[in-house]
Amino acid sequence: MRMTACTDLALRVVMRLAVANGDEDGNGGVTSMPTTREVADAVAVPYTHAAKVVTRLQHLGVVDARRGRNGGLTLTQAGRASSVGWLVRELEGIRDVVGCEDDPPCPLRAACRLRSLLRKAQEAFYATLDPVTVDDLVASPTGPVLLSLTARSAAS
Image 1: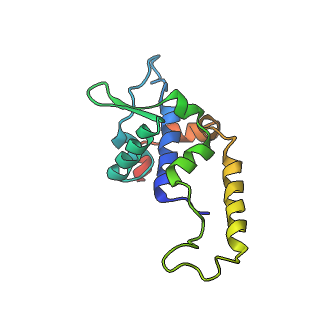
Image 2: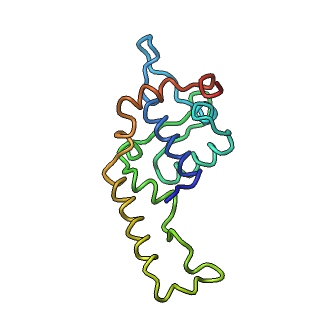
Image 3: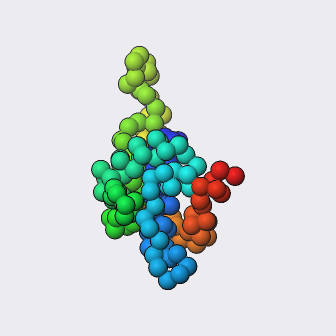
């Protein structure tokens, strides 16, 4: 199974926000919330793609976006505790791995064993992701690498 580029990007954005929120600036203070542009630069994607993904994540209740001088993006508590399996299901939507009912429909669909096997494989894929949370994804060594990502390092 291959995830869409949108889901891949959404997971990278969520992971970056998981380590960005509450990050100290080195002077005892907390850094400002990253903007969509800063996150896009850090994960090396176009701003327009990141903006679309952030909107989708907001609708899911995973990300909070605030406009203005003190604005930026934060990962919600629900987002931090979200199951990666749930998040991928929500972003990908529930659909078959193969297009048995596409136009034209597969002539083997009435007696095919492949479709049910692929459905089981898809469920095994999600079952592997279900116990993993966003917080789990950013545990060391991933978290420090995510924190080091900046517009400069992403462009290099």
